[in-house]
Length: 351
Image (cartoon, rainbow, N blue to C red; front, side, top):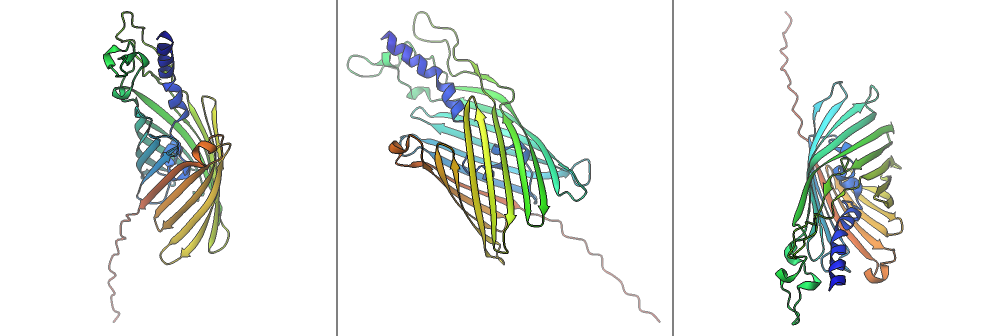
């Protein structure tokens, strides 16, 4: 019984490590700009941008797989200190949930970015921004069962377990993320951007364990630890090959608590209908030691949609039958321009 209790507590202590390893991330990382880098906020031409992305991961091996929805809205709101500078603001939501006990990680954050033009034409821009908001780690304690809670008949009696009440329902904390992006247009057909971001700057303390239990000698508060920072380095290169074809390679490297992720992708675009602004996108990518990414998408004027499917190539491929994660994403840029005021001209005839 004592060994079972130790195993239970050890598993609970690992909850934080599980959450660290599954911090928010997407295969279509450039389709989710605010979770990629806070400095991407308001970095587009238009009035406002709304978008969302949904990821389903490990449904082939888990009854309760990782499900990650996210939504955001951002806008370039005002001009900066100089004529070609501007300020962007945004708001985003996301939630990551998995497991039979509904272990989840959610956040609601506000973002702001200053976009600094580095030349007179505004072809080179340095963007510096940040997020601030609340995050929550949560678990459904009513779904938890401990070994010493089962009676000889095999029925579970929650109050019988010495670990009953040891796990808290949720942990809330405030967090700050920062980022920087440099973008430049090389010529009429080529441009690129490269960026660095860091999440959980303040390394907030949190725990899903308490010292309250049913036993005669409940242990003191346990499991408190600082959330590790997550560092992200990313880049994108865009080029027009012909009047019909374009090519967009990207890369991402991120690390958190010793867990690294490296992704390289290449997306080709085909101008299907110029009058309607329809572009078909297709590409492939590779997440090192984990999965091949199949990418599909379409752009219709200011609406962009994307699909991604991960073909698992890691040691889990036998169990997953090569099935990894699925994603669907979309964003739409709203353009509202004030019509020009045309003053009527009065012609005075000559006599």
